[in-house]
Amino acid sequence: MTGIRAVLFDLDGVIRHFQPEHVETIERAHDLSPGTIEAVAFAAPLIDEVTTGRITRAEWVRAIGERIGDQAAAEAWGRHPFTPDADVLALADELRAAGCTTAVLTNGTDGIPAEVASFGLQDRVDAVFSSHEIGFAKPDVRAFRHVLDALGLDGPEVFFTDDSERKLAGAVELGMRVHHFTGVDGLRAALRSSGVDVAGVADRSSHRARIDLLEEAIDGFEAVLRSGDHSAVVPSCPGWTLADLAGHLTDIHRWALDQLTGTEPDDPGDPDDPEAPEPADLADRFRAGADRLVAVLRARPADAACSAIYPPDTAGTWARRQLHETTIHLWDAWQAVGAEPRLQADTAADGVREVVGDLYPRQVRLGRVDALSETVVFRFPDADGEAELVGTAGAGPAVRVTGRAEDLLLVLWGRRPLDTVAVTIDGDRSALDQALTTKLVP
Image 1 (cartoon, rainbow, N blue to C red):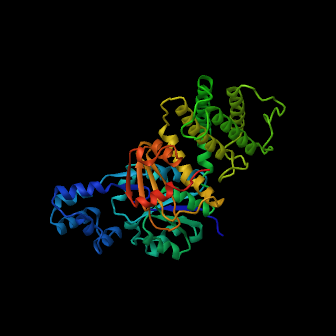
Image 2: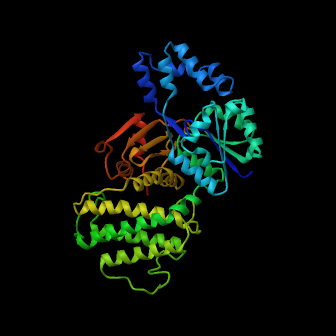
Image 3: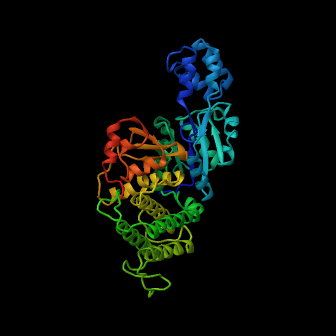
């Protein structure tokens, strides 16, 4: 199989997103039926003329105004604001830093240069190709051939993603590997399955930050052990006391350390001091094991090879896994002593991504659960992103769930029932219920 040397992104619906509410507001204000403007704007031959450069964007907007009988509405629509997708741009940064060529191919107008410059896209990718300059628009194979010629690559060396499945056809004809984009997590999974390392750079850049956060969570858990009643019941872990929870987390840290260092699972001590005795005090024993784990993580680069719970098999994976393991059990411990637990939004959002993108696929690989057929997207505005649980059906998302990252993480970990958190559910509720009744985590 030819190695992927370049990743080609669509622009609209992948790197940037438009809000449909903007169009709805304009149509209500101008007494237009819903969908009127875009039914005209994106109808042939008008859309073909503007995206192949035969008319300008300004001429396109004027033509829309003439056809709907309301120039002001068309002009307002033409100023449609957009939001860059920070997660997709971060992925593009990772790919580029790892030596992979990144580019954009959009069915665009002569307004594209100014639009991409407004959020610095030209500095985040190696090239931006717009159909209005090429003279051919996706899915025309000639648009894709233009890109290949400009990049000096063959089709099998390029991975292409677009939110419109129909527009993949020309790329397929040239042998590109393609992906129907529905979310960044699905894109990352598709890149990994195509042999593209999308984890290494991100892990290297965030490795130290994750270890710092892990140590903060360890400090918090130790503080609960020092001041709390070890016989206190842990409501979120039925049948467990705080002492049981501490023993479990101590064992998990030990196990992770064993995977990092390649030692036997029952090795009792520090890799640098295998004869060190175990402290008798519960809090001391927890802290000693946690400190050994942190020390080994800090001594290893993110890409240091080792056995891991999910890909990639590196130390960076364990920094991430133990951050989330310790954070969720810190939340459990806080509950046990009657504290008001709160999780940091960005950490919780990454925890959601881990559940749906790494832990759930592992559950399926191990035969612990059946793969879900429907795709579920979890959105968290407080952390500026989303996570996608990819179903086997291959269609777009069946349901989108929007809420605080903390709430979504706790729901996925079974710490809170769905009906106790504030979420918005758009789509097939039964698909969400099916996902939540599946054991997504170990």
